[in-house]
Length: 92
Image 1 (cartoon, rainbow, N blue to C red):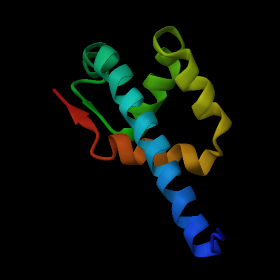
Image 2: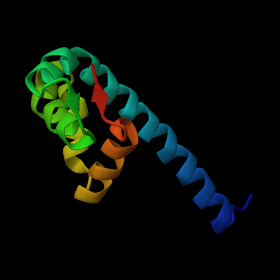
Image 3: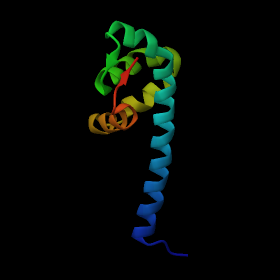
């Protein structure tokens, strides 16, 4: 059975999408743990960059494999992941 380039590309994109969804879910779990303290220290409001910073700083003690995986991504891919997960920011 032959697989066309188009089919292979679709298979790869589906696999990456599932992988990205897993990372996003794990990021949200870390954020849920550190959210209250972070929002308190930032006056009740945080944008996606502040959230990403806190998740990366606190993440080693919560989910070290997640942080290691994110560190393997390019800077652009990291930013895309964080924007997708935390794009709207957070408030109390």
